[in-house]
Length: 401
Ligand code: AMP
Image 1 (tube, protein in one colour):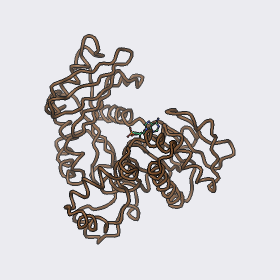
Image 2 (cartoon, rainbow, N blue to C red):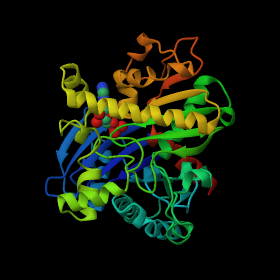
Image 3 (spheres, helix red, strand yellow):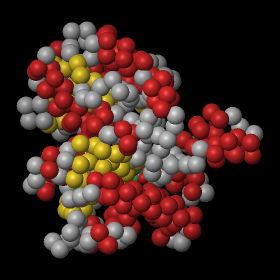
Image 4 (cartoon, protein in one colour):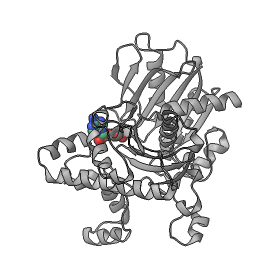
């Protein structure tokens, strides 16, 4: 059974084609600059040469056509007929309170996602465009929606409510939703396997640290709290996003800079803040920041310190919120690769009885236990695999329906 996983952003379409008989990846790639005259596809068939070429992709449907052309290409392709694809799994960012798990995509599901659009105006519209484009190109192929918010629907009210008037939750569904759910779910389940404990008896704090970053407290297999909120702007300091912030600052910035709320939120809080802003606009990439900090750049060092401190603060909060802790997991581009950041964080957690094995911590991009045998709490690095979770959910749901 071959399953295509599709992840549509505003100007990109990422894809992976899985052979679910052994969960192997047949091909993966991305169409970038969708909507412009400069769109191109990077296509990587497993075991064959990579391909990068300009494509016509003025919209998501054209971008998906380019994906199918690449999958069918005589030299770089991996299938002979589009009918070989049994199902499509779509990543969808925001499902509000509508779905607490993955679902077959029906007209009602698309309507429900359109209702959530206000909650994720940057993410849901391209996700929905991707679903519609696939439906038009492969009308008889079953599709499944896998939602970033779904895994966090187990949070209790005390964790997901803000200190706002309750009527705002009732009338406008203003609450914490959380994101990166598919990643937190994958790495927490893998952590339980690595610890050789049943998932429903394991308590872990998962740190997804990438350009967007979030931490989740996962007690006995259920997310009980997470750092991102109504939108993916809350919580940790990120690549360019500000994270937690006194809302009063927005008003002060509007006044001081002569900007609208929208300009402050989009221009500053989303795009110019985080480690990028803190480093005096040096970079949002941790490789650049770590290199600059090593050469003595004070702004880069400060950005890394603030980033690490916020992580440590949330780990402390979530350890207390759960009342027990088996492991801390690092994942995402930074969590999987930056041994410096992992060390910076773990060096502040020794009072929890954590002892890092420095040699193990130096290894990048691999599943690893980073702690010494005496460590009271394990620290694990686990490369995330959201696409595989989407493919697995799609397979299971299609088999059921
Ligand atoms: P993601 O959003 O999960 O793909 O993570 C992307 C980010 O991971 C990049 O912007 C870098 O900041 C970081 N990253 C990737 N590779 C490394 C590395 N080898 N060392 C430090 N940071 C890295």
